[in-house]
Length: 271
Image (cartoon, rainbow, N blue to C red; front, top):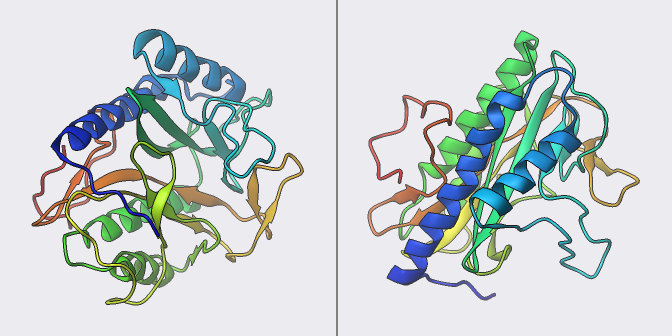
């Protein structure tokens, strides 16, 4: 397993790439309304990244294992789509929930973040799932510091989500990130405290729990990329890129438009 420890220059570059990824989500937020298609959202994101930010959309033509290249610039996962939803021409409707997953490449460095959006208004159950998943991500982030273990992150997320009556997706996880889109280590969203790799200052990882309203079992869509809940229950996901520091963490993908940080989070270096 090869884990990269970023030096001061690498950390500075990661801060830029991650800030830009978060700003794409802020830019897209006003467009997430009933009637818009995810293809239209994808084009808005692509043009903003390329023409305004001078970035490269990392997902576009991404083929990590020699499979079918991903055909779009962002992932748009609607309702029971867990992750890697490919944008299409189906209009979003009132009550839908959608995850927009953004990864930018700026000067060779990757910034990765995702956010849930509620289209128009949604049921209390859908809103609760989105909120609990957001809080679960932060429960995991709060465990990050040099000397902690990856299992501490997963355990905090799993215990919180399952206590709320939800299930945690196990087949997909967070990851190291830097000059490569996906680096070691894998960051599981379940586990036992005190187990797994020890975190070291200078590591940059994503924490991105996928939480299902129903059972955790999944199946793959026919397009070779999209993953859905087997029981067609709703699924939600949030993601931040996090820098491990000697005393805690720095969340690199913060922005002015993101939701408020949960009250249970202690004051930290967030950006």
